[in-house]
Image (tube, rainbow, N blue to C red):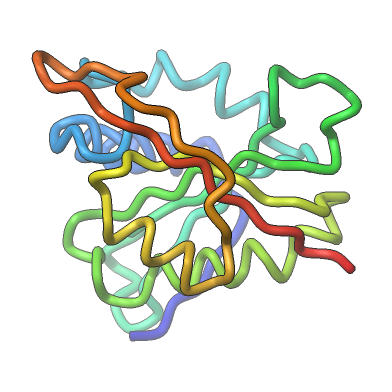
Length: 171
């Protein structure tokens, strides 16, 4: 498969929300527990739009009619404190039809490559310890485990451990 990516536009927001809501349903990659609405994500979208912490959407080059099939967002790290601006937290979400098909590798590779141009020297994210496909993806790109947080999340009656991973993208 071949993919492209671009900065998200407001017209992409319904599809971004749809993809994120799939993640909420599975309870494997986010602590949100109720589906979101497009309207509830507008402020989040506009906080990223035109910034050095963009939202990227990915499309399948061979099937452009499918539209957005995944997205990645860079976010400020640790409550937007300026001393941390060299570091970006990331979110990476794929439509279920595109999981395990190389899209995550494509987006993560692009994120690493383009981060320095955005003023980002360090990338990090947190992943449920039970989400081994995501942990393997980040390890494939030389992300190291920086921390383990036992039972810090509860989804229904199931507690989850969280793994923090990160890597420097500049020398």
